[in-house]
Image 1 (tube, each protein chain N blue to C red):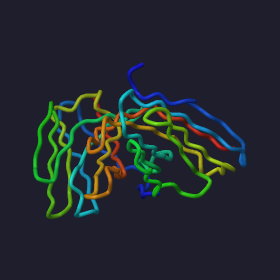
Image 2 (image 1 turned 90 degrees about the vertical axis):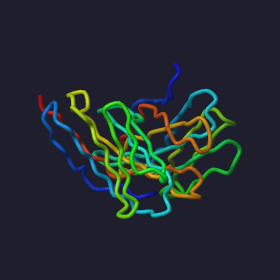
Image 3 (image 1 turned 135 degrees about the vertical axis):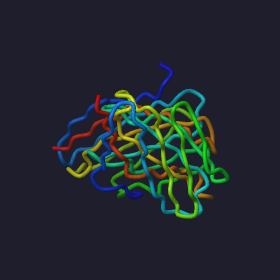
Image 4 (image 1 turned 120 degrees about the horizontal axis):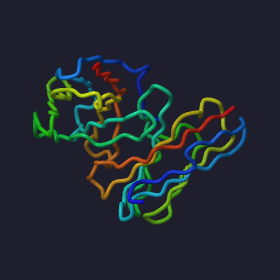
Length: 113
Length: 114
């Protein structure tokens, strides 16, 4: 199957601080990117997406930044709350790959009260 | 319910046995995906169904793995002659149509092979 990473990197932040979760992607032909949040024991949930013709998109408390030059994607969470504690995955869709989403390794976010 | 439903939620089996995992997608969703998630790791693509098109099976790790989908409804993932390395959570997701990658995931089936 498509590759997944090793054990998850972790990010620990204080409640109220901003969080930045990073993701490097490999396929320069990818034209669509998406972030998911996965809480323990649950399936991933959609957070925000961005197409390759954009470099920034904002949602409620979240912002996704796309840097195609260095193939880097980031998710910024403003005023992080304990309920944001979860594993965050980025995913990419390669151009002409028929809609298949390939997920990155994931980052575990831990919010300290 | 309105979400993606997977059954069973947990499955314990002995090495060498066959297992079937079921996914009921959201009604009307034409795209259906299976992913595997090993403990503490990311999501590994297995197979993708889109409408009546031939499925993308490029992620299936071996010929012990197969999946079927009946029309645009239920899908079954079958693992034959299970091995201990098959132990993982198997996640199913659906989306409304091709080109819409906002996947809706089920809670997964936790498979444990003893």
